[in-house]
Image 1 (cartoon, rainbow, N blue to C red):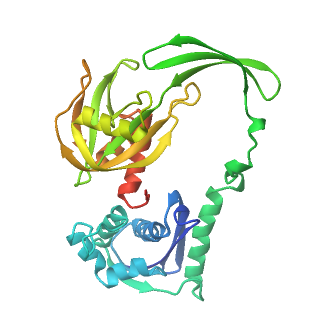
Image 2: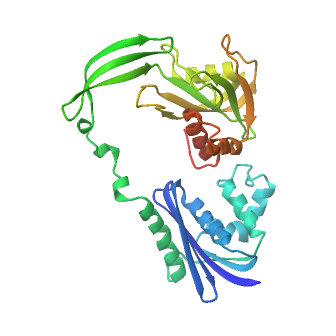
Image 3: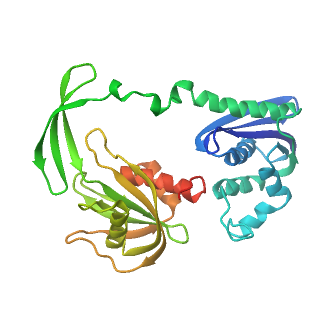
Length: 341
């Protein structure tokens, strides 16, 4: 069995924030450096990912010594925390969900393929390999996040971009929205015309069951002539608050009531043509009642694991923008990478 040493390290600018990981794999006189980047992550995730990628680089079963300055990683194996978490359904001794269960599961599976010895090293000290790993991880962030990409929005002057309205007329009044034809003055002094859809806004809900499943709805959308898989959502009535709308739509479309509903984020789904803003909420503590859809509205409800929904998104089977953004954010929320009040 080949004997291999792997030095690993992770870094994060902000924690959470952009992060980098690195590993140096040593076999005899051969050394291989690998590193990578994640746009929005934590330092602990990068520490785990560094070990994962180091082990993934091995092409056969090996006797491996892993060196890391992360107590989070080393103690999880040396003190048998990981085994206890796994047996307890990725919960700690207090019954609380642990963070990063997806990475711990992947790392656990990799460790079953090799004979591994875990070694804790002192970070930012006199260990050349550890210092090189740290440099590689930090450089992975620097290479991915160029200075021109870090310009703050507050540094941008509105007057350099703003199109001033000269005249606006409603050319269509519909049941759910109006369309305005707007004469504008561009920043360069040239006049133009914009067609803008004016919408009262909407709320959408990510209903998360106690087992982590997400309640989704299927309904036919005439504009694209297809049945869409979406999260429950609906238009704000006049004077209605987004939270009130979210609760109403959740109950009408799915028959669910929620003990807790928290605002996750808001999006402009199509700002090039519409001012619509969709407010997206997370709903938990669910109880089932009777579905109350609008007259003629055909909506079916199904509960799916978030991993399956993410696969549908990545494969292009889900194309609804609010659902894509909401599920990807919910995935981070369920992994403990995103906190909401």
